[in-house]
Image (cartoon, rainbow, N blue to C red; front, side, top):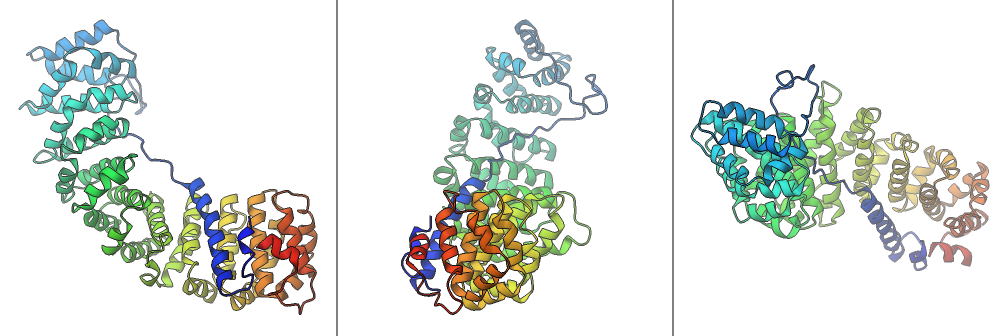
Length: 507
């Protein structure tokens, strides 16, 4: 694993670049393991009809499946031009909460056509009931049901303008659900102009509409074809600047809206196709400012669900910085580190997943000397070291951040040595996890290389015994033996001319 260190073992020149390249390769593997699971869960808007249909205390009750004859009778009731039609639609909507009934319904000849006829009627109450039936169908996990709804997509788009907020919201979530399940639906919606329609809707003053729009867009942006077929269309529209505006409005625009569009930005950033465009819109300073604002809210009266906004904002910043597209010249604000540690402190107990996100961002920030110096000068190192035992991933990331600092040279390693780092690293060496121990060995190598006094202190604290335990661990033994060779040299020996065994392990 340390094979690329053979050339330039010293702290400057090409050696530093080789060390960084090797760590970046390992981080790429970590990022792949960490990659966010696609948030393609469907949303369901329902009135509180549980009591009406026999439920109590808001408990969700799924109706029993209907027979084909019963489904046919419901359809006929809906088709009759009588006062009973609306009641039949209500019964159909209730029945369509059952998956088997959904499948039987869409197989009936004329079923979807009948719903579309009512959905496009001039009678507002019929139109709303039909929309609710279509919404129930959109929530199906059966792709065949979603594809049966293909004929309705153009009407859903049409009704995203000039109608009631409630109706538009229902249309948006129905679209979002259909987009999740079927590539055929997505391929039909693109030429039908879904992106221009969403671009028009995003200027709506209604929070419910904006949140629903964010849901549709987030589902589109997670599609496998998004980088080539969807994101270019989004970038050619006014959507990106409005998305950024709504995210950075944070709590003012409504946290639900901000959360949806923050995840939209995250999916665009992760596509690696549009970061230059986002940077040109000022995404980096805008998101940094938002994070500072969010951190300032935390000690006071933070709203419920704030972590759901903090998470994608952290990811956007982290991934934009990871692109290495000149971002470092745009962001040199020591308040960002203070904000990160405030967020860590707030969410550590109740939402530990935020710790990992903060550490990813901290890892990318400390690739630059400015943030390494700032972290040390603000005396944030003790707070960082306290995160070592949080979890396996947290341990790896904390150690990686410390490696970022140590690789900057002797002055940085001296400061690490002066802090209580070594006593905390010794228990880490005894952990049964090879990945964590391996990262700890990486850090010790940098410390011993740049600041030999650390090696002497390590031996005085009995660290060599911990190293000896790993001489029989296949993935660690070569590095453990190399470090034992390093600590076995006299204190005055040059770190730039290690023995041959050390060169082989760390090269």
